[in-house]
Amino acid sequence: MTPLAMEVPEPVQVIPGVYALDVRPLGIESFLSPYVVVGREAAVIDPGPSCSIPALIRGLEALGVQPSSLRYVLATHIHIDHVGGAALLLEWAREAELIVHPRGVKHMANPARLWESTKAVLGELAELYGEIRPVEEDRILAAKDGDEIEVAGVLTLQVVETPGHASHHLSFFDQEKHILFTGDSAGVYIAPLDLLLPTTPPPFRLDLALASLDKQIALGPEIACYTHFGFADQAVQKLEAHKRQLKFWAKVIAELLNEPVERVLEALLAEDPNLAGRAKEISEHPILTSALVRSIMGMRRFLKAGGEVP
Image 1 (cartoon, rainbow, N blue to C red):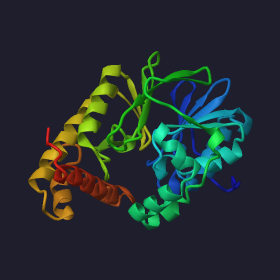
Image 2 (cartoon, helix red, strand yellow):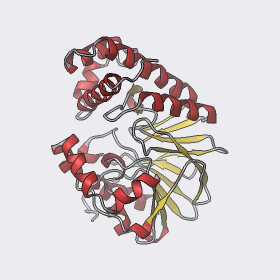
Image 3 (cartoon, rainbow, N blue to C red):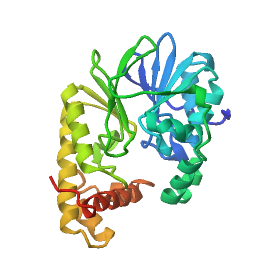
């Protein structure tokens, strides 16, 4: 399960007791960072796909986490790159439980339809990430807006429903420590590149995404923890910047609604202040270009279905 030759991801402390790991799925650095909370027990937020679980386990072991001490695996949403490997991690930690949105429970217990739809969208990438395997239903807990989850004596996480990227998306916020785990609700932030990107694949809802960002801003977070990739201070400013970015994307895509996706991507790379001058860095990243194309398609589908440009 955890080959000795596998490199141990170096834990990076976010705040005392909370660590980010670069688990490098498919060997891709600076793309996926599960967060580990370590106190009297441990928890993982967004463990990643099956292919990254061996690296995650090595990272947990580097932090002194044993299988018996892992209590919770929290999922911001059930997309494969966030929680596709949950079943493998729960095989390692037999006492741990998975926490998901109520709509995600049946799909994690019986992921056949989820796996087929994932393959239809991602193609070969889904196979490379690894199959989504079922989690025993009695080990899945549903969390809804307003619930609180006490984690390891380190965090008390408020569950915040933040749909838009996905209808079943949750964020997690600790009011005392002002730390927010955003999943994909606040976009992609590649911290080493200081690069902010939308993640708006079908069936994206711009209206819900903007309302979710307002909800997160109102919480007053100081640190935003992005699953893709890394954490940032000045969290409110990052959330506000992403709101502006989504509105800008909607405007540009509406103006080019029937143009080829390649033309739209070219315009966004040239005109989005967050992306301007970064085309080379984006094109060299193994996943970002295809992810941006899916995001354009999601925004376009929203607009063609009658969604309004704010």
